[in-house]
Length: 222
Image (cartoon, rainbow, N blue to C red; front, side, top):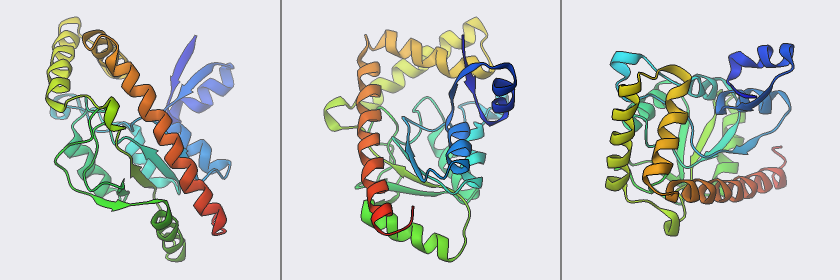
């Protein structure tokens, strides 16, 4: 079996010899330990909807505040409370930038209505240099919108998310099992369209991460 490994589960997985898929928090921790400056992911975790009842906030946010890393993602998963997640990142001092966009993407959609500062690989390199100069801790989150041809309409996705959330409540799921259940349900409701979008965005995020990595290396910041 493959377990979900956040930072706290790393010692457990190592001690028991378990196989695991790392979350953004664990990947950030391990990347910094091995001097990896940039990595790509689909979307970071964040503040869950109905957080007032569940107090469900991803460890990803705390880890990003502590690690000197650049993460390229398609924003946060749209199943989360996007506005609260952005506020949380701001409070924790995580710099959020949009890759050639001034609007924070929401995983399957290029839109959210939340404005952010646009950037590119060249500017990210300059920002990293300034960050090092002032010894400012914390990650840089580069939000890269999903390629337009794979984008799913925001309102359509909201309908699917709400259906998935209703189903989740009926079966009484909580904790770690929530996100996998909702994403699986959305794949079902979208007839596989969300899975295709997921694959497309992670490939494009890897492309952007490689451009940033190349620019950082060429400026002696690796």
